[in-house]
Image (cartoon, rainbow, N blue to C red; front, side):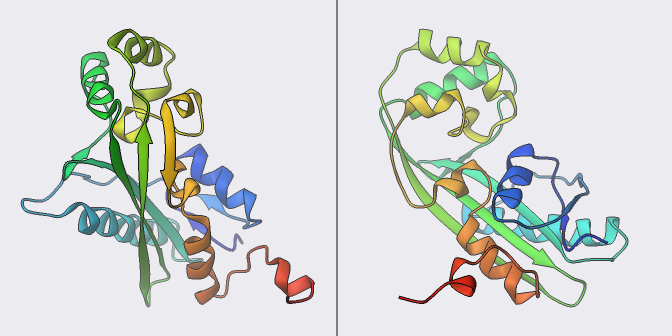
Length: 199
């Protein structure tokens, strides 16, 4: 039996869990990710993370705690979702060009008795670029399934001038906060202090 159910098909979240040594089984869930009227971005990502965790727990047969996560790119208070097509992606990328935006990532763990969640906010600044760059980036295929039409861990990294906050949260899973949540459910993660000497 896996120690954890990952309620996501995202290869990036799978890689991040592997990075911190957490055995898991992938059980994708499909939910309505529409923003509710008047819903604030922070509330939106936390709600979706909780719903994904709870759905993953049930879908997997309630055999292990489930982790759900959701990431949203926010500019001027607006949630920038995944692009519908090239024109939508280019519009989004040009809005982000030369500006600072927020990336909010919610993470939740549910086991049928409780569902605990956290939200991490990271500030990301983009370099200035033109439409030709935005179209060339779209042509790479990378933006098509990414919130905000970019992936910081891939080719899109060259668009990022600076970040303030959690890099792994921008990729899709805030590792420090995820580790803290998992430990509250008795799931071990790699801990150097457990094996070495405290400073």
